[in-house]
Length: 573
Image 1: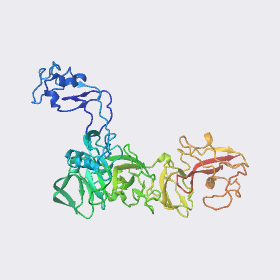
Image 2 (image 1 turned 135 degrees about the vertical axis):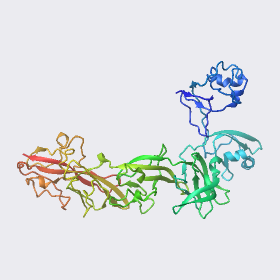
Image 3 (image 1 turned 180 degrees about the vertical axis):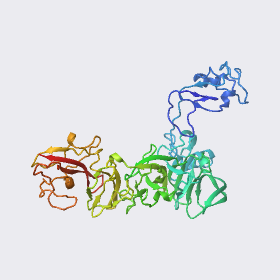
Image 4 (image 1 turned 45 degrees about the vertical axis):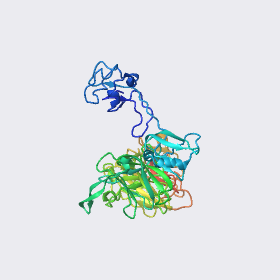
């Protein structure tokens, strides 16, 4: 890759304290300035340029420190021509950090550290205090900023040694996050009430700026004077302790710092430190499916332990109109209840993902909640994955579940609320048998919840069933057919549960079956298993029509739910 470079190419490595590993070949960095190289008359000091194949061009030296063009005499041995611009490409090796933000540093190998004397040196060295956190009780030193840092160790024999540490300004693991809490962003402030904490890190983040700020109170704009307008701010002014991030309308409040927990307000015993990343809450566009729990994005980090916190940014996201709310968040009896805090989409938000706007939160070691990321979900029916229900048939819901019909369905009104443990749907559109209906059942049991989307299809729908009758022998039990004689349209291949007895569509069938062995188990109870035997040949135009079942039992569902999904016709001979 080639890039236009002005005014100088540099093999600098560590930017912002973050080391990113070796660069790819032909990648270059453009570094403005570099006055020493630009104005020196010592060819030896320009050896770096020659060794990096830049000696034959002077485009890197457009102007001198005095803003005048540099001639060949200004840079002896480097240039014969002055070019207006240039392009070049070469590999750049970046420095790899040996420690990361929040890590402890190791003393020199073999040194028996005198911690009291080392602390005495540290406490009088402003540069070290700005770079490290010293835990005198725990006998540990933590990195609080990035760069080429120095620290002085004192041994028990009285000798001292100053050591350099290449430190990254970011953590190697997943940081906790603090999003801008002001303006249009309104990220969640962090409640640190009852905690004894201090902030460490770059002063451009942790040193707040004061000024005037407009706030909206009761729909009226008022001006607050001498308040924090920019920076990370730990507010201890009230009975609570709250952490805010004020962007002040700028985009520069971004980076990582350290939050340290202490045992008391004396702040003399460090208990725990963690890295926090402050920044703009970039909204991640996500997709979701009605009835399926939404998931976080993660941005390359593990998502274990994250929980959903929907943003209460408008009443429309929870509106109870004729189609019901846009989502359901499960609240179990206990914090450890199954699916506690899970969020399930209940309506289509393809054109309005802001209606399902979620912060993914996590708790730190002290139970404090932090936002990790913000996602908005464009949700729809997961059409091809939803089990089919033949319109007019019933789903017998096991008594272990408490069923409830989700209000939202398409088309509206084709599905009826379950009654006496039976769920039934009508043909979605009597004027168009090819139209498919979508609805969703909520099943509750033993402090748990499941959602079961249903796809309702008319038996005459040619996109699913051929209604072709296949020959069957008198006296043989009717069983589900497969393969080329399954009687389904191309693209539809339901998984049939052969352990569930089929039911006859009596309105479309003859009476040439054994009624002593068959009963509709979805509507009746019987100690014997229902079976279908043909006892006579089929009358003209009256084959036996059987509807076979698929079963759904996801993960922790206590019992399966069986759904009539396949129409097959049998011409008895």
